[in-house]
Amino acid sequence: MPIMNRSRGYTLVELIVAIGLFALIMLLASGAYLMMIALTRQAQGVATGIDNLSFALETMTRSIRTGTAYSCGASLGAGDCSGGGNSFTFKNKDNATITYSLSSPSIVQTTSGIARTLTDPSVSISALTFYVTGTASSDSQQPRVMMVISGTVSSGSSKPSQSFIVETGATMRGTDI
Image (cartoon, rainbow, N blue to C red; front, top):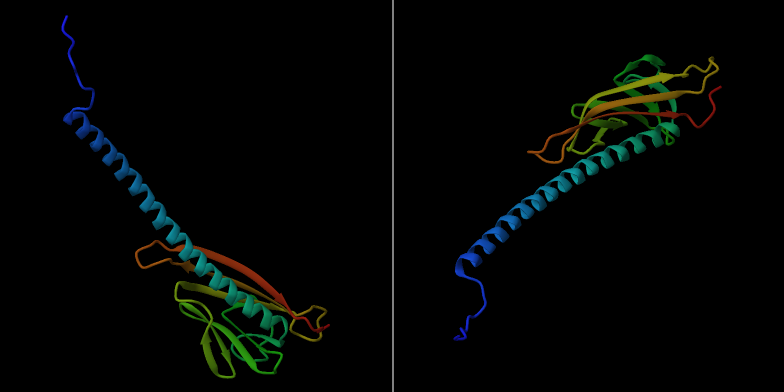
């Protein structure tokens, strides 16, 4: 019986099928990877917008806590507004008049007539309501301000916006009782 010398190896058809399967699997994996990158960027954009909103609220709250002469409305002396108002005015620790209001789509701080925007363009504020209580020196309440803010945060022009509603409060540090 003659001994045949057959070399072992892969045929061209087997190599083409193997490379085709590998390419298909890599295409699916890279698509999933690119999708994860896009979702991560969107989440980072929303987180940046929320961080900016948190910083603006912290700035407002700190100023309100150290302020005096709380007033619901755009001028001092308007007093309480337990039903809610769209602006809030007070005297800060340096005795300057500060007003917080909504200038759609941003929160604006006006200090002695000079306005500046507190929120980033990625944050769109649709509603800003102040609830002020305890401003009268004859009542037995410490002055308190509740802020309710709603809007959306976007992470890019083609990305969907995330809506939010935030409620925070501040009580005057000095006594008013």
